Image (cartoon, rainbow, N blue to C red; front, side, top):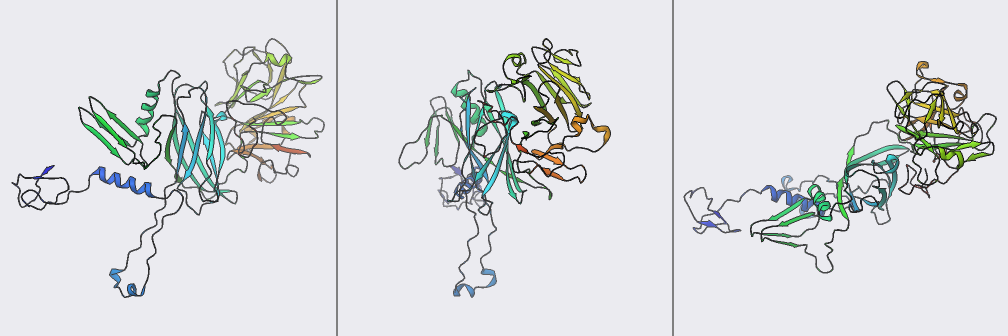
Length: 513
């Protein structure tokens, strides 16, 4: 209750009951302005009543004969169009499964009805193998969107918070017409964290309603539609929650967690394009290599590229190397003398450098540089894997470009493969001082990575062509006949990654790398 607030009776001491318009002395009361709680509650209620898929448009007035005689001032005003805010509903996350496989269910809601029937979803996070993955949202015949399931694993990940960057794209004639973005945080708890600790951390960041009852008071909540509730009662307090369900079972167990993330549409440049086949690892396969040509040209676009031992199951490296003898490739034997992570090549301020991270050592021009001591790469440098046994894998730096490095094998596997190690999202330059290459690399096509995928550059005309499995390579400069583009770096093998797939096309039937 409150005291009388009539301005004509400032000395009135009568109390006003809740909901009454006059006090006990029959003094009229002025309407109190709406509180911030009332305004926020009304805004949330209006949002929860909006449709998740249909547009909300102003109702068209019924122009009857009686209405036509109204004065202009009495004509109903037009209500502005208010679109439903697009958002992602994320569910299925269980933070108790620390160190194991997780699956997130993502549902697209609130998208305009006139949107294209298929959207591209791209995710970037340290939790996802190779850092990113791509899927497609497809509209069903009912008008809603088919959900997308994303798998990841927190195995061998430090406990804490991990960002997941989401990008939803709408395409028109091969270009990005619209783009929506959002970022949410996934909590990877300690292995010994209790269920109470996990949910306290989650509720502290995701709740939008908090009710507390202290010192024998009573907290009561009704409704609950569209709310995430945190109700606490201490010191003989009573907390009552009524979800207003007519009949049926209400599951109050903490199994999985769900929440909504608002999608923010961002402005795009007029010349924004998207690659038709985004990937950071691929291969050019020559079905009939001529003299001196390689059967596989393996392409990698990584900020840091790891060279290591070839493994069919859960390889630790990006570039998988095997020993080649006179009888061909041998994935056992001397190949086992290579470390899972043997060397790392990355970009430096001076160009590119290599670092030994192995157990068996690395020889650069016959000299061991020392473990964890980066050495700048130079044109013609001889790289020998293993300092104790000669000839397991021997590579040569045949090109140092502004946007990458080309490596050729100079052992028994010289005709089997060579490697492009490119800097992501970096186009080539034509300055001679920025590029140096040997004849074996100069004969190869000019390739680079941009817009999430690989491109071919014609040196004479400057024409840029995106590389995809459907691209005809015979008409491009630098390519011989019988070449094709494969979306995996090792298409001749079935590489199994039990912790999840790498960056691949959403239509791939098997997760390979």
